[in-house]
Length: 242
DNA sequence: AAGCGCGACAACCGCAATAGT
DNA sequence: AACTATTGCGGTTGTCGCGCT
Image (cartoon, rainbow, N blue to C red; front, side):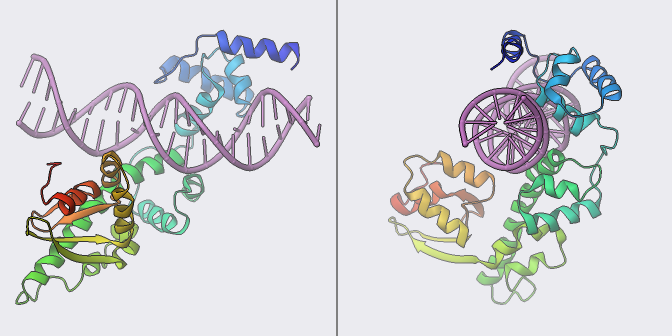
């Protein structure tokens, strides 16, 4: 490494770098620097602009917030539909998806997916299962759903979990106390359960449930539960996590 | 009024790919 | 060819504001 590069590295290591939310002054500095020097060469920018930030931080701030063509405000229904469609095609390729939505950033789409779509899908799945189960338990009720998939027809917001619903599994078992338990889950969730049985603690199950994977509906109580909770039902006949 | 929980969004981190020397 | 710097991506964490108790 040359002396000059070594000096820069030393300077970076010893300089107090700012973290956390950007101030108006910092935004202004960044905007003015890019206006006169153009974007790119982020580490040089970070050193030359007077900002006590890393190049990565400057790049992110510019691309996700300050760049003039970044759109603000809620996603339109058309944009939401496009995200569903592209996500089903490409998965979590956020930057690729963002390229198809002018003015929207990968970060924004990623946040949208995590905070809204996954939670909404989970609630819808619960409703669909309830409808289906009420039909299964009451053969006279001709108005409820013939299968959980019906619930999702004509509902674009259900797209993220439609594949999952094709694999819906309904089952029941008697625990060691003789109580009859009914549950509903998916093939993927069952695989997650096998995984859960091999885990010493249940912390991962809670995470899995949070994102809608590896979760089960307890038909007796009409509640979702984690793999770990189902495991304790099976082993002990009691819900010792509750 | 204070504390808490939650949702939304901003920012950070680690890693891999690529460019430059 | 080998090494270093830079860039970009996806996952994760942090922060803030708002509503509820």
